[in-house]
Image (cartoon, rainbow, N blue to C red):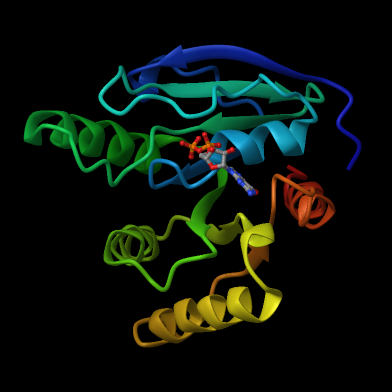
Length: 197
Ligand code: GDP
């Protein structure tokens, strides 16, 4: 898919206030520092579209971008911040759960996972929740340039094995690097294949 146009639309704290659900929507989420902003900027070919290294604890918002006037890319606030109050964590959960359950045009959630790490409980729990609620998702491994491809494969396989303990059907996955644009065509191809209404 050729990205001809990518622009920021709005930030909202309530799913009800998000843009009218008239187009297919792909939401990106993951632990803080997983490389979400870098990936969004790499996919859209725009260096500063998503803000990199956002500060933990700052206002957590649902950010909508309009791509090629045909689909929404959504940057969701991440999870797994170590230094965050219980109250802020609960607020995040309420907002995200409402968004995931009530966004009728949500085509797929892109769950970002750091390819350097073995399966992390917080990520497995989040995907477990998506699966239980029937929210479509794929796994997107980030920062693959940081280690050998065999190391990346080992971590991917470990994730798949963990998922297999609970689910019969394994989610699709992509291996990416914002640094060298790995996985860009595959991920955008997936969006092109799935966003026909
Ligand atoms: P976010 O908090 O999930 O939005 O993560 P960022 O996109 O801000 O990235 C966190 C850190 O990881 C930054 O220092 C990025 O430069 C770095 N980073 C992100 N993606 C990649 C990647 O694909 N390769 C490498 N080498 N570094 C990356």
